[in-house]
Length: 434
Image (cartoon, rainbow, N blue to C red):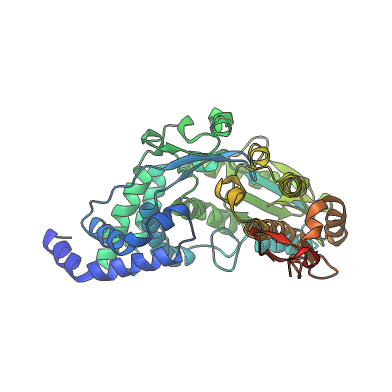
């Protein structure tokens, strides 16, 4: 591509790219960074468009913090402008990747997801020829992705697509900048609970490996997108070379079914060889689970059986801990008390919600509880949902009511209203001033 072509194309497509980036801004979720940049959106998209078209874009540093749910791990959250650039990449790349995926991979795809993956596993479990199951997990997956191999796969995908020459040029350069950036060498802003960040084992940190050659930071849109595509060739190897009929993959969690443990062991050895020789990855030595189907499997947050599924005990414990936390807020009302024991992630990890008006807090509690109960409603847990409400809701029962006899979710009781003398609190009708 000649320099003159690029310059002419820049003038022609600059406004179009800026408009596409602005659409990505609108589609992005709410965040403090988005609110802080609200008045700068047009200027930000204009500058980002110029940088992408002239190949002068450079990613900024990250927000580096730790989360504990579903497990302790480090997160590298990109700056707002970089998140918009990554969303634009995903908008271009997702349709091309979709044409390459097999039907049995379920992460980061429209119409798929964890519940669809579990439903497919259960369907395969019910087939008479599937009496044994094998679960495989890739060791330190995102931290071990080989950057050179990933770029090769993405270049082939881009340059064999029907995208215009300019889009191919911009995508290839943008992706290269993001992947080759060493997130551990930047002046990242460490946020959140530093104690949690220090508790992460060294072998689970991005900096454990040679980050110039391997590793994608968890927390980026592109990391999820590229991480899912990196195993696409493995999917085709399993389906077309090994001829496996019962196969489901969700990111780096592989589930394979067959009629004999010997056949599954042979397939495991072939998969292990392919991962090592083609993708520079290895299986997690302690997360290989081979068992008869009727015993059930821990898969994507559920204990899965052929005809039913249960929520894992850790999720139920997490819900009960959150309910205890909410009750401590309602009982004590002392901000300093519950700030010390606040959750490590989500809305309740922030200071702002703890100083918000009571009704705002109550709506946030309702939202969190309904999220957990949404998970419980996806499993066979009707009695458990009722039991938790009657035994663990405590003070919350004064404010929240189940929507029906199945306890699927909760609504705020009618009759609550603002006290005229204290608008930040709620009172009951009989205590309201006339």
